[in-house]
Length: 145
Image (tube, rainbow, N blue to C red; front, side, top):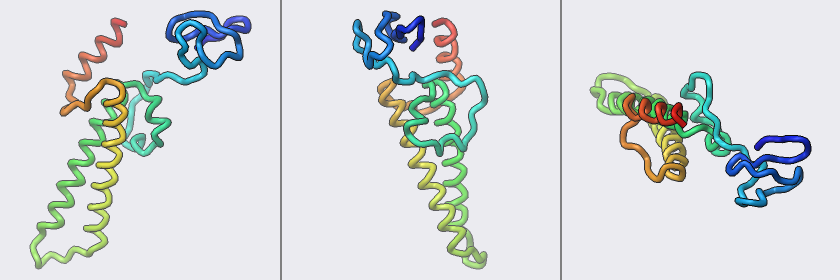
């Protein structure tokens, strides 16, 4: 959405619209809805904790990177949880440690599913693997417009 002398320019079709219009007069796209923007900085794992409304404003490329981070952390948490569960009986592991590992695994699983759900809405599927090849191919498509 772009403003020019009291008119709004639709970010989808480029048509000029009245300043106070809710939807584009040509394509009916919402004029005041934010569109996902590619982030210019590094992403970090804690961003998976953002609410759905904020995550849905992440660019698809950024969501894929975040999904990769969450899946990696979820795998680490699972391995830790299994190690604690399989510890010999002689090792004294308090129930709080096991409960914490299990709750972290469930939390990362739920966060992963939220991000996968947004990706399914956008691209129609959730990628089995988010590797460098997938990210590079998407980055090239983005740069080439």
